[in-house]
Image (cartoon, rainbow, N blue to C red; front, side, top):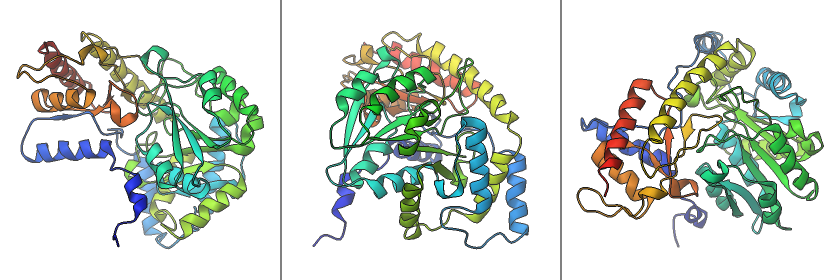
Length: 400
């Protein structure tokens, strides 16, 4: 009899976290390595949010709360959805969880059974297929490469749907590509979904406030109100408010689904941290002007990285609409050899070469379901990004 449950054999450790660990190990050894693998903003949590957390501690808000969120935080989330997305929910339609990943995990584990299929556009965030597989479902991938700016088409969605399809998962702006869907593009996908009423939609909007070039963010329940009753709109405080470590994710959706997710949470984590919830109330209800300021800073970094990576022969780097990642296609580098004579046969070997020879850490495209490519997080300073891109340029120029 095995000690480890067979369900764990269906999942793998996160490759993004694995690369971050490698970077930390190298730095602890005193090695000069630039890490571009971590998916979190380098900006600090806003001061007014930190002060709200300190005040919550002083006021002894340190006890258990409702399993899936305090009344105050649910009210703030309801206000956020109304203000930003023109979506109306009541408290029974709101869930608060221990980060956005927990929200997705609860929703999929609460709804997916053996034989169910979940459509996932590729490239995808690394956790999506593993959570589906852990729940016993089958991921169905739709691939959209650099030539499509990493966005799937309605025809692809139509072709992927079967009687077993339970969910379509839409992440916009995307991790890892930064691609974001316009309102019209979402309406076109919604037209397909109207013909398949058994398919639910999970909108992962975690990077909603990090968009560029006057791009107007939209979410599918907003532009297709008739899909509201079968859409779970997922968001959180991690990215926009630089609160990754606070672990607050949330979602709005149909009350029966939210109730099922709360049931699961009641027997797993129970409530999110009470102090983090108080901080999240302040983040959502407080000043929002810093969101645009930080997005403007990210846009300058995006432009820098896209420009420098597109100077590399054999690399094509589309200009994303949002998030803080780029996802360059490296088809033109596969098959070349390093100065040491090692042939690069896939993007994982290319990333190893960057780490070993250029001392730059990124994440290979195979981890995100679309290769050959790699993900760069530009959530760091322009000076560090310039140095990292120069190292990549030099390493690629040395390939033969």
